[in-house]
Length: 533
RNA sequence: GCCUCCGUAGCUCAGUUGGAUAGAGCAGGGAACUUCUAAUUCCAAGGUCGCAGGUUCAAUUCCUGCCGGAGGCGCCA
Image (cartoon, rainbow, N blue to C red):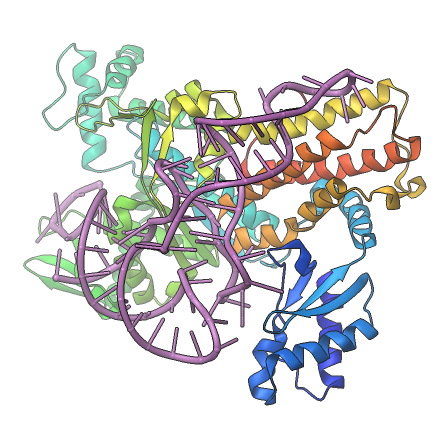
């Protein structure tokens, strides 16, 4: 709203000065408070084309705007090489508070970037033959949060996970279960993990090890994900594609488009036509399918259901992205509509000591172990604190501590404090009265204004985080808001001797707006908003 | 050899289409509670943004080349 007021005013001012306004006028928040609330570099950007000195153009622009002040603007000045800085009246923040309260948790910072575009977010996609392990955790938390961001910004989101429930690995899994059931060692290439023995003990004597084991693994995945509040709309079975024949359909469609050829008895995809460094086998010379063939059929299927596909894959799959995009292009899809996000690895530590993950022996840290150790909220928050582009190190002991080293408690504590203060206010006879009867102009303390300024950035932060697929930006914002709140709490009493009843009312509404902001932040990263701690 | 990601304070990391004096947490130093949760707040200190070029009014940001770290390049899944 305020941005529109300012850009319109700048555009009008430039026109009045006989300067052609640029197509987009960028407004940014200066890093330093003394540079005002908003700033534009439009003078620097247009000076050359207008044949003017940037500083002079900026000065003229600032003088014009200062003489013809837009709504909420208290002063306009020029600084540095030609930046035009806007200083706003506090009233714009009071207006903002009213808007936040009116829109509430459901609608504040809810945007419509997607305009209902359907997007399929595929993540986790773990093999259904073992419990989810620590390696799945980052992608799980990330994928779900990205889905939440897309949902809040106007996309029709489907959360989906792929079940690789046929083939060699499932056979080995079944053999391993059957062997343990009989008290024998699993086959050489089979699964050695302790969970195999545990599951074999649970398995009825007359059960089919493959089917029973598959169901057992799925139940395990569901239970774990449920603990962190992650729920899939679709659990897509690879096996179902064999039964429905869509894999053959996909292969024949590729064949019709002349995107395959036969060599050495195998069927190959001409992926080099679309930027891959070599062609890829789809059907092996023995007639078996490679992993790629059903995966192509799967993505083809997803495109029949959603306009955009977003895959969250681990770093070990990145070599796979080019061939999958090539395959989709071969099928006539826009490769840009298939977005593949690679999440880098996570190293686990305890007190600085590396916790080794050993695949061969099957001694892995499970996702459940992590949740047991640090709790669901701390796990999600910590995994999302950092960009998935960088390798992450998590010290489990640090994350488990309920202390100030741990940002998740810092932010949740702010939320709990708000509830505590509101309860105290009610106890002292200060029920919150309707907003219309409240004089928000009493909110003039620097801490109060800082809190509102922080809240004002949430919509743009949500937009940024959604577009960049960057939940960590939301975490960063939440930490800032919490810091602004703790500062306010320290210096501004809501109820107390020196506080008038009117100011108490205004501050109670400020608390409500803050609570809304925190709750939205928590929701976007899937962390609970505790009322007491 | 090719591909992807990373390199910013002692440590862990931010840094939004290139902007003004590069930020935060932790660790270490110094302060602050007669009242709403001290799981708090405030102050100071801490930087050749891996290196070298290029693009321009302006580069941590974009381009090129190096150096260093991680991962990936199968008729495995």
